[in-house]
Structure formats: C-alpha cells, structure tokens
Image 1 (cartoon, rainbow, N blue to C red):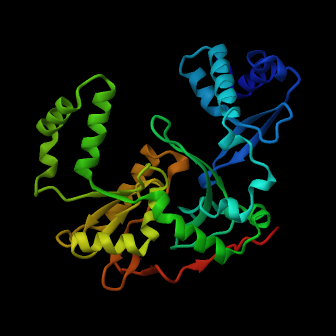
Image 2: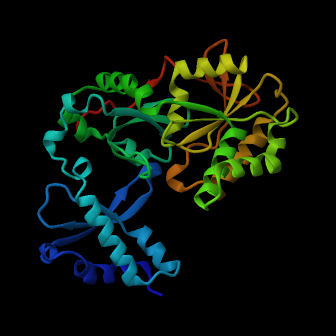
Image 3: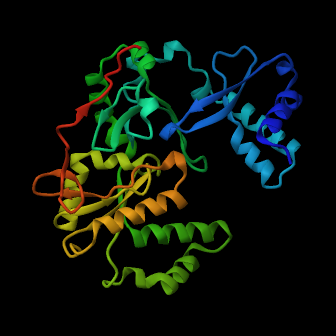
Length: 347
C-alpha cells in the first residue's frame, strides 16, 4: 500500500489522464487548506486557466484507497467530482466582483466555533468571543444544497474579504444577525424524535416502508419517551449544519426557556447541534462528570472539524445569561455584551 506521499505523487503523475483533453496542459498545485478548528487538509488544485478552481481534498480519496478501493478508481472518482464541481456556476465562477455588499447582504451568517482550536484562523478573521472558549465568526453562503444534495458551499470571511466587501465589523455583525433566522430556521426536537427520524430514514434507505420502520422503532425504543428517562432535546438548524450558533440567539433561548419552564443545560454536541436538558427536575446532575463525559465523546466520536467544546453551559432564564456551569456557577457571558475580537482590519 502506498503512503500518503506516494499516493500524492501518483496523483500528480496520472490524474490528468482521467480528465478531458483541454486539461492536458493544466497546472497542478498541492496546498494545505486551513479548516475549522485549525485542521489542515492537503488539497489539489487543477488550474487550466479558469477564474475559480474547484478544490479537491486529497485525504478523502486516500481514505477510499486505504479502505480497499483501487488507486485508479479513486482517480476516476476524483476527476468526476472535479468536473461536476467545475460545472456548478453558483460555486465556481466567483471573481473579485462577487465580493460586493449588495450581492452578499442576504448571504452572510454567523457561525460558532471553539476559540482556542481556531486561534490561527481567528488571527486573520473578524470575530468576537462569545464565552471563555467559544467565538462567533462569519460565513458567506455560496449555495445551500437541496433535496438529495446535503450540505452547504460556503466561504469563511477573513480580513481580505472584509476589504473587498468594503464594510466594517458592526455592519457585518448586523447583517449576519438579520439573516440568522431565515438561513438557519432553528429546530428544537426531543432526542426521542431525533432518534426516531434517524431510524426511519435509515430503514427507508434500505427499502423498508416508513410506517413499518416507525412501528419497529416504537416497539424497540418506545421506553425512551418514558417519564423516568431524563428528557433531552436537540437544538440545531433545519439543514443540520452549523446549528450550534442557535444558542447565540436571545429569541431562541427565550422560546426554549418558556417551553421548558425555566433554566436548562446546554451540552455542546458539535458545531452542528447542541443537546438541551431542562434543569427544573434535574438539579442533582454533576457538572464535572458531564464535562468528563463530553470530553470522552469528543475524543472518540466527534470529527476534529466538528468539535465545539468540552464544557457544559447553563441558561439562566431570569438573568437571561449563558453561564459556564460548574460548582461556582461562574458568570460567563451576556447575550447582549459580547467581547469584540478582530474587527476585520486588513493585515
């Protein structure tokens, strides 16, 4: 089996053989892309003179190869994905003219990330601290995929983008907050319903009728809705991406507090969702044990790029504050008093 460096050289020597004739003289470049949580991924750029070049993440195709696929099949797949992306005008034909405020004002949204793990990226990006370990940054939603195409194509806004767009931090923040609800469409579901939907969708993909899958779930897991089980809820976005940012919305926090009749715990599952547990009848839960549990889950089950935090939070419904929940109930952050970070000045 080839090492990643040997695989990279094989790709360099052969990938153009799988592309149309017009790519025969294309220039190949390998770069490290800085992703969420400062995760660096090896990328391949195939430049045949286009204004915008689709990005190929080499690691995912190397994984296919390590999992048993032939090296030539991975190159076929790589080439297919590249050509499909190159045909998508919404994603790939972005020039400097794209970065004007009039064009982007409905596409800018806030996102939540771990401040420490994104320290390198935040040096060059407009952001503000939301808590001791969380920061709010901003994205441009280039395309929100629908139907069978899951996900979004987006651009993390950095200081260079701010200069091109020609706005200051206050305008960026105000614009993102105005787009928050229409883009994210926050969802708040019981853990029981979330697991049920996942089970039914999985069984349906395997050919089972949804009604039969629902009956099977109720027979096997109906006890999860029993009153003796600690009630849990999942807060996310309608498309399932970047939903953790919903905790920064005062409106969302107030609506959940009203539904749960008081304070609630916020467990950071990932950047895509958080778990909510009402504290009305669960005050005996130990924060140190929960933090340890979150840490263990993050290390074993959460992708590096999806990690959010190891700390459990509490929403105080009377003070309308998010607190880092520990034995001293230390004050962490008011929704209306966030610390401004890098304001997007050019570097």
